[in-house]
Image 1 (cartoon, helix red, strand yellow):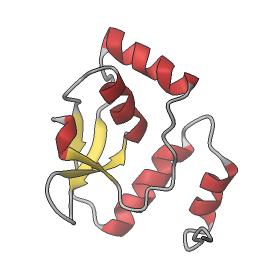
Image 2 (tube, rainbow, N blue to C red; image 1 turned 45 degrees about the vertical axis):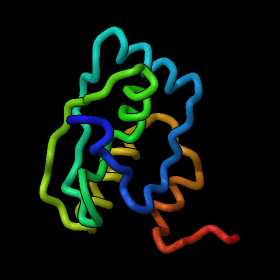
Image 3 (cartoon, rainbow, N blue to C red; image 1 turned 60 degrees about the vertical axis):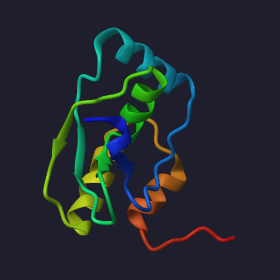
Length: 112
């Protein structure tokens, strides 16, 4: 699927930073391609598709100069999408404490 058709999950609490870890993922993608498809659903708020799992893979693929990535399209409601997004991100090795707090306390909002 074209990267331009993919949009971040609304309220996605997990940060995607261009750091060493993402650079290594980029290098892997340049060499081997995207090995694990992104999980997406039809964007309920407009055109394209909403990423449920794979925000880092999308960013690394974009950084690597790709224009398309493999995806799995699922029919998920908002609650199912949040559960899938949080579960897939909890499988990552490094998660910020603030990101873990969002999982446990999803109604917490940042103060401005």
